Amino acid sequence: MQKATTIEVSEEELIRGCVRGSAQHFHLVYEKYYGKMFNICRRYARDRDEARDMQQEGFIRIFKNIGQYKGVGSFEGWMRR
Image (cartoon, rainbow, N blue to C red; front, side, top):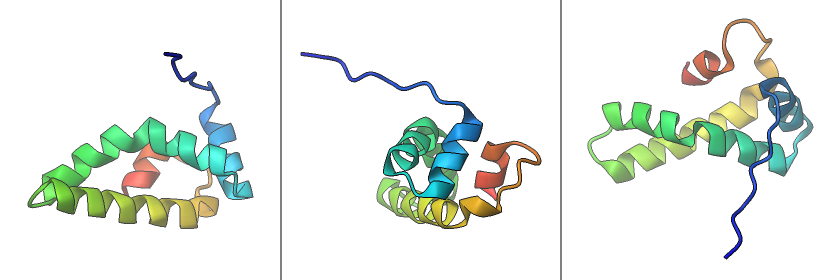
């Protein structure tokens, strides 16, 4: 069985790719931050299903508004807001 390769892309390039609408870049951002975002959602959710719903809604908002990130402060901090 062949292992999937992870593409190393800078955070800046990930953001630019998402702003351009690149599905690959959306996927890479999701993969990179999935665990951290899920853990944050688990703190506020009653159960895992609710946390997954919160996480999905959060990523939708992140991708919808990613063009508003101006590079001030950390991207992860911006995503949490």
